[in-house]
Length: 169
Length: 169
Image (tube, rainbow over all chains, first blue to last red; front, side, top):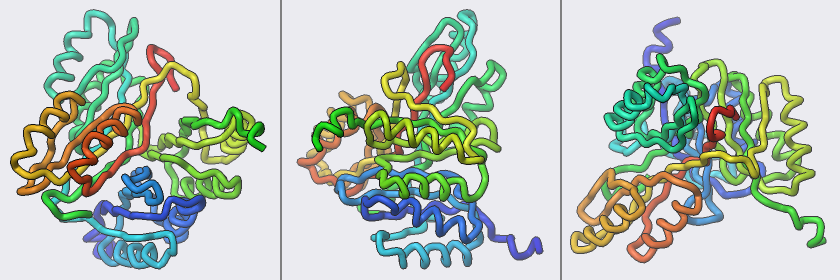
């Protein structure tokens, strides 16, 4: 029923976990059993080498996300789970984008790079590689503007977020 | 035996997969069964919404990495696996770092930010949040220099990589 999904939206979860083999498999297994498709995921160590931080973007309504959060909290390797939806956070992702670029097009692309405060990290005879950071929307907007030149390859990190001010996530 | 691990090193694998529920669980399960600890992982959609790209950093010697690559290739959702170790690639990751910062320390931290071509994305009464992109080594160097101020929180994306020039990964 359409009504059931009226509050379906993308949620960003920060999950602090013990940095041990198998943690990712257990968490990914939990999401699979629930039939959730993870939209994006970043896993990396924190400043404490025994702790990793996962940032998971997943779609669902409030009730199901709450359920997922509770189940994550039950896993022994999970230290803390937080749903940042609606909070005052800084969110960023990074993307490397390789586009076709004839020499006479370089200045056009350079203009786009300047407007988006991106940077050029590699230039080939007929290619350019651009590094851009920002919100998902900003990166999508850049991709749309680059599409006419011919996008050869894209690598995106998942999103990472931290709470603003002195609050910790 | 120490000898067996003489060529142990971190390998970066690009894995293109079908964007379907359960893919991550199958791949994470494969790594767990082999006892590999994933160092960092990024999963995100590519320019083709049916295809996701995983960038996996994992430690091992050449023979075991080759085995992992072969086994990944056998999974039905896996489109392509590539080990980029030793190739000419651009690699980047992004980190958000929140540090303690009294007002009189702001200019010192601003200097560091300028030197590292990082940027300040949030300022609180006694905190600053910094966004930095670069190689893992660059981000680690920045963290070491910020440590004396008091690092409150760190969120890092995993690494993403693309081959230089017209070569595609």
